Image (cartoon, rainbow, N blue to C red; front, side, top):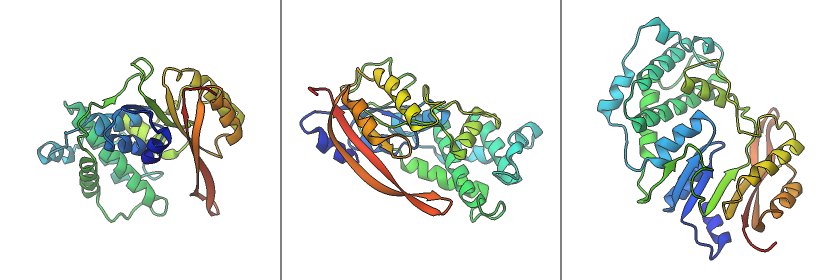
Length: 296
C-alpha cells in the first residue's frame, strides 16, 4: 500500500511520515522499510509499545543473556495471582501465572527498548494463546516458555535500520508537521484482545482502555463522521493525508465530502476483504484515499 501511496502523490516528495496507530504497526513498518523517517503514535499502551520496539528502534535486539532471566519462575503469590481473574475465561491458570511473571520481570527491565521488545513478544504470545483458546483452554503445541522464545525471535527479526531517525511520539501534534500523515479511521477499541493487551501492559487485569480521543462514544456512522470532522481540524498542519476506512465505520460518500472540504482528493482505492462473522465470513469494502493541500 505504501508503494501505491507513493505513486498517487506523484511529484510530491515525501521524506517524513506520521503514522497514527489504530491497529497493528504494519503500515508504519512499511513506510520505514521504504527509507522514510517515521513518527508513530497511538493513544493506547500497545501502540506505544510497538512504536518504541519496532519503529523508533533501529538496531537493538534482545540477546539471550537479557531474555533468559525473564523466564525464571517467580513463586510470590502477588505475582502468580496478578492476572488470575482471566484464568478459565481467556487463558489457562498456567498462562495467567506466566503473564504475572513476565510482567514482573519486564517492569524491572532498565533498558526501555529491551522492555518494549519483551512486551511485544508477550503480546504476540497472548494472541497465539487466544487464537487457540477459542476452541480449547488447555492444549497448546508450544508450552509458555517455548511460545515466548518463538515470538521474541520473531520480534527481534522485525528490527532493522533504515538509516534515518524514527520516533515513538508522545504527542504528534506538538512536533513539527511531517510531509504525510497516514491513519486508519479510529473507532472504539472493542476487540477483546485490545482490552487484554492493555490490561497486561498496565498490570491491571480490570483496566479498560479509553480508546481514541474524540471517538470513544462514536457508536454509529454519523457519530464517527462528526468525530472525524473535529479530528481533521487538528491535522491542518500536515499537507498530505492518507486515510483508510471501511464501510462499517462510515458512509463513504459522506467522508469524501468531508475530506474534500479540507484537501484535494488525488486518488482512492477500494479493496473487498473477507472478515470473520457468525456465519463464517463476510466481505467488507476497505477504501484508501490520498488527499493533498491544493485547489479544490
